[in-house]
Length: 542
Ligand SMILES: *[C@@H]1O[C@H](CO)[C@@H](O)[C@H](O)[C@H]1NC(C)=O
Ligand SMILES: *[C@@H]1O[C@H](CO)[C@@H](O)[C@H](O)[C@H]1NC(C)=O
Ligand SMILES: *[C@@H]1O[C@H](CO)[C@@H](O)[C@H](O)[C@H]1NC(C)=O
Image 1 (cartoon, rainbow, N blue to C red):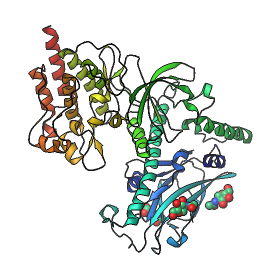
Image 2: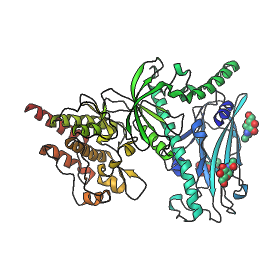
Image 3: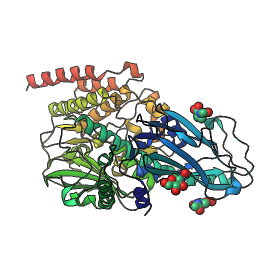
Image 4: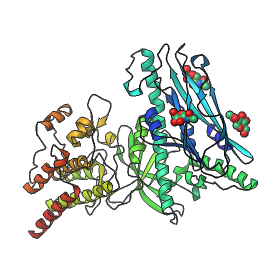
């Protein structure tokens, strides 16, 4: 319902402006490094606008950034309303005039949310921004839920140095804040996906856009945010037509999945589901896809993670990298991530296990793969290395290189994929060390494990473990070592053992990847030269 109300109040030719939270602000509120756009280039992000952002007790003011993108003056009015519990909050105040013109330079303004500390409450606040465009005016409503504690002194220090008051109220509020935060994280991730898609689409403007989010034709005029951008003004009738069209588009959003046909379950975890299926584009051309999604009982955190991790490789194009083709988020409880797929493609870890005669995770059987030779292994490692080289050239660290996050086809060509759902599908490969973070402990470089430091050299370490997985047909690394002991084990200088049948030269390379100091590990180009030479030697003697 709310969506429709909002949509009706927003004309298609919305004022040409940006309204967003800077990455510093998003970091302060949600601990994420990303800008959050409410309006970008005049295009409204309803998804983000619909979230009630929780404001922790320690944050006393909110910052917004805006900028007019047109030369014409853009008059605005600002208004803030305390929706409930007005006894818990003094009147919020802006530090800019509540009436004026949106500046053409980016400007940050703030609104203070002063708690009275007379009572503890979750106070709902709505900040309304009216922007006039010629004859009409448009209202955007930003909703916040501020946590006010009773008798708490105003924090005069930075948020991260405020000691934790362990009152039961505090714990309750923290919990409440988290749920909202997860939703917003999903929104931010989804917005990031769209922004990236849009950038790409702009870059390839003449292209027929095979990578749109599940659009058109049999699904009528399904909307992607791109088609929303109408900074030019339209005649009234056309605008009305547009508005109707828009409503219809939103309605269509909920059935966009009609383009996706799920055929069979490829893998299944406790909440994650991976399907094989087909996706029909605007011209009804069908293409094989893999669909990653979650079951209905998945939590918001799991949903957010799926979106965040699934978007990691979005828009990257390389023959050794499998990146997501599209995202369907119309149903917040269970987004769909689509990946292009080949009939003979398999998850590399499952493939390796099948080579050993083991099946996991409901893997579709198929003929047992031919035995792998050292030559195959080296070639496969080179493929993964090529993919990783490309990612690094695009300034993307993978942070979870492992056989489970690779794909292999019938010609033993390997591609790197993202790690969305891997925690759920390969639970034995991830562990929590006392905190709530489920990490691929046994694939992590020592500094990533102990200090959470990531660098290209940390990906190189994991690539070494991947090489070890290839030579052992996906044995569990350090199977006998307790996850809690891994750091100490590595610090003491222990490493994975040389697999049977693994030539010394190849093992030397792996061991080299696991050097204690990141600076001592080989670079990817060095590894590439070595593995190529080694591959040449192998072929020479066969
Ligand atoms: C915004 O404009 C609408 C009419 O377009 C008006 O009803 C509303 O009161 C205005 N809101 C503010 C905060 O000025
Ligand atoms: C309003 O507050 C923001 C954020 O603290 C600050 O950057 C900006 O300079 C302030 N503007 C005015 C006019 O005081
Ligand atoms: C008012 O406050 C409570 C929490 O105290 C909250 O759950 C509720 O959603 C708020 N908003 C409204 C509009 O009642």
